[in-house]
Image (cartoon, rainbow, N blue to C red; front, side, top):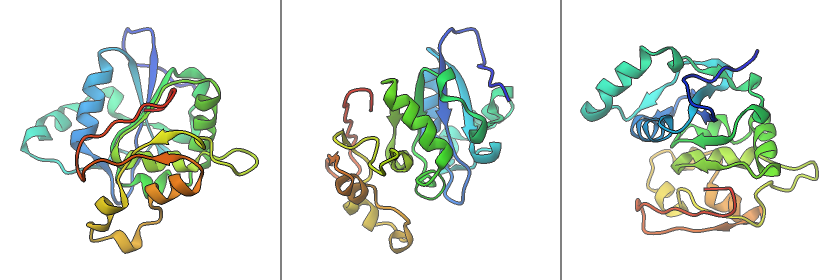
Length: 198
């Protein structure tokens, strides 16, 4: 399966999403898509090429989501068929389901290994940071060992009703894997840039 980038721009960006019980934040996706589509050709992908399951849809983003679903590029490619070498950047929006679907994905691990080796930009937002946890080297070390990054803190996660059933706590994983976790005030915008990882 050859992936085709949509549009007229010369640089391809791989926009990663997932489909699971927790879905993708509609607002995060809207911002990520509108900001990047002006500079990149975007390819949306999900495990199995399943339709995007948007969560937190409200009056302010409902119309945009409805319009987006009508576009040809709204049909995701299969994550399993993505060749990381064909893309220049990777963006993982806030996906509460990343802790379930992507944190253990062997397919995503290969893509992340390629992006890390080639120093290609990787941006993970909010719960999407959990997707980075799947990227291990052959010696089982984490690809992002020694990096600084952020994501939902334990304090933020513990307030969620499903905290006890979370399969991964990003802050703990990051620290246990030899990286530095940076947190700010709960629910505050906090960005960490380390090499090619945002």
